Amino acid sequence: MTTPRVEVDLGKIRHNTRCLVQRLEARAISVIGITKAVCGHPDIAKAMLDGGAKGLGDSRIENVERIRNAGISCPVTMIRTPMLSQVKRISESCSTSYNTEIDVIALLGVMAHRNGMVHGIVVMVEMGDFRDGVMPCDIDDFVAQILNLPGVALKGIAANFACLTGTEPDCQSMAAFSALADNIESACGPYIETVSGGNSANLSWATGPDKRGRINELRIGEAILLGVDPVSGVQISGLHTDAFALVAEVIETKDKPVQPEWSPVVVERKTLRVVPSNSWSTRSILAIGNQDTDISGLGFPVGIALKGASSDHAVVETSGRQLRVGSEMTLRPNYKALMRIMNAPDVAKVVFNHLPVPETVSAKENRSGLAVVCTDGVRS
Image (tube, rainbow, N blue to C red; front, side, top):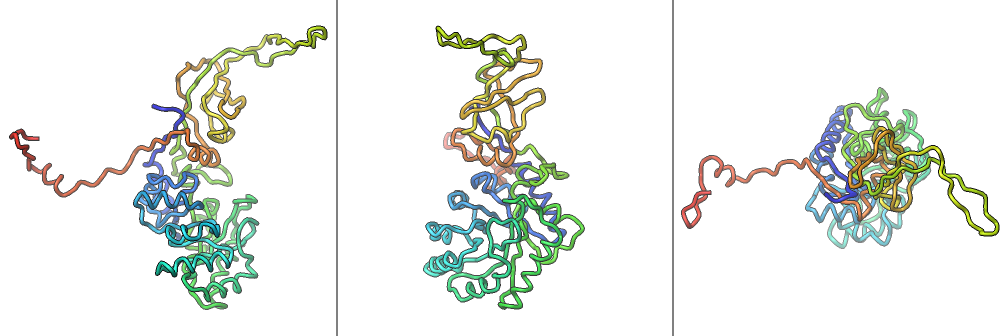
C-alpha cells in the first residue's frame, strides 16, 4: 500500500460521535459535527451523521461543496463569517452561517432572495476569546439591523472559547452568554432558537454539574476525531484516540555519531573535517516532513525518539533495534498535525469500517430462494 498514508477508522468516529451525542442529549444539548480538520471528507462527515450529529459545520466553502457533491443533504453551517467574495457560493450550499458583519449579512440576504430562499443567520458573540464576535454591549443594535434585512432570518447566537487565547469556559461566562438570548428576545422580539455554546473545549463544562441555561448546541470536531479534550490533551472517557493513524516509510537506517566533532580550521588548506565521536546511535529517516504535517504534533512508538525534521524528512533515533528500509511506522497525530495531513496532497487517505450498504428488495428475494437464470440455462 502507498506511503505516506493516513488510515481512518470510520467505526471509531461513529462511536465517538454516538457517545458524545448521548451524553449531551441527556442535558438537552445537540451536536454539530465539525469537518474542517478533515477537509470535509465525505466518508468522515457521514460517520458523524451516522453517530447522531444533527448537522455538520465547516469553515471553508470548498469543504462544504465537497460534502454537497457527495450527495450529503443534511443542514451544513458555515462557522466562519463569510468572505464577501464567497457569499454567493455560501448562500447556495449552506443553510446557515455564523456572522459578525452587517454588510456580509445584507449580501447573503440579497443572494438568498434571488434564489427564493431564506438564509439562516447565527450571530457570533465575543465572550473573551478575543477572536471573532460582536461585543455583547452591541448585540441588541446588531440584531435589530438583521431583522430589517430581506432574505435572512435570525436563527441564534454562538460563542467560541479556547480558540485563540486558550481560555476555558467557566460557569460565569456560560451563564452570561446564556442570558444574552433572553436579553435579545426582550429587546428585539425574535425567538432565539439556537444558543451554540462553543466547541470541544466546552465538554467539561457541558457534562459537569453547572446549569446549562439556554445552551442547546455544541460544535464538536476534535473530541469526535481524536477523543481528547483540546485544552488538556487528556483522553475523554470512553472515546477512541486512535481513529487516525499516519503511516510513514523508512528510507534510511544507519549508525551515526551522537555528536560529531569538528576539528580546528587548517588555515593553509581552509578546510574542516569531521572527527567521529566515540558515542554512536542508530538513526532512521522517514519519508515524511514538515511539508506533509506538523512533525512535532506526531506521537511516535515506544523506543522511537524524534531528533528533527526538514521539509521532506523526519529523523528518528531508535533504542536497541534497527528499522528495516522499506518498513512502515505508525504515528498518532494531534489536531494540528491531522489538519496538515488531511490537506497534504501527497498523503493518501484510506478509510475503512464503512457501514454495510442496505440490501435492495430484489437482492433479499434472490437470497430467499429465487435464482437468476441466464439465457444459457446456467444458474447463478
